[in-house]
Length: 230
Length: 265
Image (cartoon, rainbow over all chains, first blue to last red; front, side, top):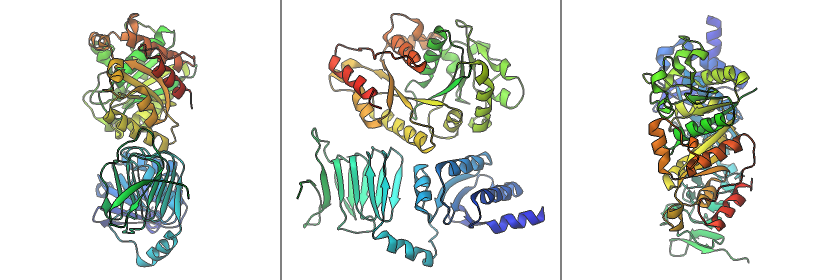
């Protein structure tokens, strides 16, 4: 038993952070990891009772079912999973779809930050579905969506945002301050558009929508124009 | 028989989930199906009231889960239809008394000798909602033609998609054709346009629904009621029949447009 517990502790490390507890997973298989986490919880139920838990899953690529299963198991033990931090874009996307946070206040170690930012220059997140209310997509590059962005959804990209569909939620391009970022959509009737730190007022829904491009113009104001070929 | 487990949910409260469950169950029972309704709203039960079975409750779903009675003992037979049953919620407990795996287990026990299990989900997207959808083969999302209800329905559809529960079907409840005509209410087209899921029925606003709920006699039993007719049609569609959408008003253009949208999946 003792031996097993030691093993569980080397697989999953748990420590307190400002927003609750953080469990850091190693690179061992997913199943072993979450079993180890659950066994740590059942060892010390009073410590975990009612805890808010964030997970750092490293490079593990996790699907919706993996996270849903773990979240339900945790909630049966009265532990609420609120965030999943990962270096895998697939896992980040999964977590965002489930409404979990993917950034926590603990800064990522410097050496891990560097490669992500350099890759960001040319990476895009490609999503082929409608983004519904309550979903927040955050990405350190460009975001391309084939589908609609419904009211109550939020898209935040450090680069540009292209939507092959209707934008009726909130979209924010150049979120880290890039004033040359732009937003394109087939129908741009968003509640609110943001580029860098400029915020636009409500755009009128049009009877006969046309593709539009929003960017920051020469006077430093956010402006949307009908897109014309050439 | 292997039952289909159907969960009725909405996100927002007060849009008519419980009314829809009571009416669809009664309509299915009228068609000779064996139906079991489960009230998933632990702590705020009211499906028993709408079905007029409040005074017959001895055991509830939490008693079944905690082993105080057999599943059979918690199933209350309906007054009008001998093949229709209700498993009531507990009024004195909260949502944590039930887990998703409990719901799956109960539904699996019911499957062999039932045609339909209909689960009434509580409002919201928390524990109670997760319990209600855990066992579902199919989900029906109820919404009203108003902006806040549609936005909550959209959130629920997003969660269902993320959990790989498949795309749910939509019931638009309490549509008032006069208000739509005057542009004072979202049309069924507007709602469908935003949600982009399959439409299974549009129920017109009808005061006989409220009268029926208060009397514990679902409106489907009233042959003259328009809403009752709409619920009967939805029940037929749930059984795989192809029933044309009702012409709620003489606005034929609108209704043919809805049929087009409904068939576009």
